[in-house]
Length: 299
Image (cartoon, rainbow, N blue to C red; front, side, top):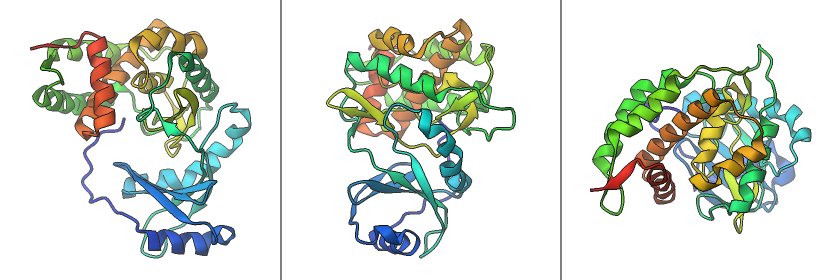
């Protein structure tokens, strides 16, 4: 849920580079096949054999996050009871690839972007997020998506709102721009009434895993750090229908009124970001959530 505008040209990594980096830096995996790749706007994930994967950032601004993620996350893994595609080691630049990258444990399941979660999974997802959200010390490294706060997103929000209003909703619907904007701004001015916690920072349909509709784990951990837990709750709300939100919060535990308002604002921001990305699965879920909230009406 970071601002989407990136000045630099994204880099890529080909299979020959992946092979060379793995063989050079993780020779115990030299006999493992370089498999299918998944290209996201900010990183590329490549499967390595049956049990590992490699994640490569596409922009220089994410290089420090990939360099630190395995070390920051490692102490937390023993307390997570849900499957985690965790970064288990850090790769170095080399063979023409300019940034740090991560070797991850591969969890074999689909994502909620392709196989939506069933209602029975909302409580499990909430419980998993609560496990992530333990108190973070004052000197904890920050999460770039959850620490800056909603006020830092206002200019990007205005741009995304214009884009979504011009794009138009499916089924001859139109975005209720005034209502969406008002709801976002209520959350943007809601106080942060709880201490910072450890946060994921990238909860969305592509990072929440689904095994035939059952919650099956969480991916994409490079932003992990301290921040506002409302951002993760808002990201998770993009994945589940509105009528499942009570179950999500039942699994998560107590949520203050101010936190719920901030989470709603983060959900709206995530929805408009997904609409701009124009991935058909993300855009479909984003519009579904906006329609459920009564924010996209028949023309």
